[in-house]
Length: 177
Image (cartoon, rainbow, N blue to C red; front, side, top):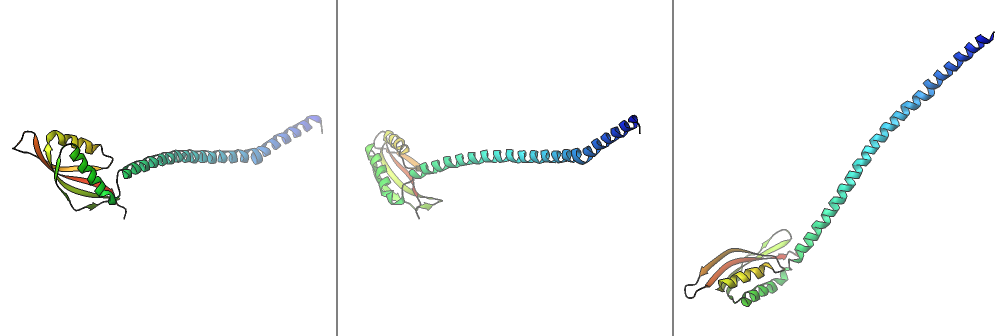
């Protein structure tokens, strides 16, 4: 065997080994690498989705805290039902402080709602119109939640500026039952 034939056999062996290593080592490794990259992209997408969900959950937690704070403020303005006489006394004192004369105060049937009780009171007050206005302004500033409905003002014919007011005022209380 001469040297050129040896070189040719050696060259063919080298080419064969290169093909075998590509076919049995490099090609499967590339396929596996492509699959791992695809799995990694799927996992990254899931991770991004998880981060968005975590951010949304944090936002919901923050909103829930704000709502709980708002409920606490609202409930702080709802006295327990045992304090109805105190609130009624405060309303009467406000009316008297502004020069209004309470003629009648009647409690109407209370209404139970979710978490609170509405106690309507029918009231009749006599006095100056400006006193009514000041009375309503001070009622609005009370820490307790109240609502005036069915307000009827009637002018008294005897004296100028004197009126009688008939209205239903609702006071809201916590439903402790």
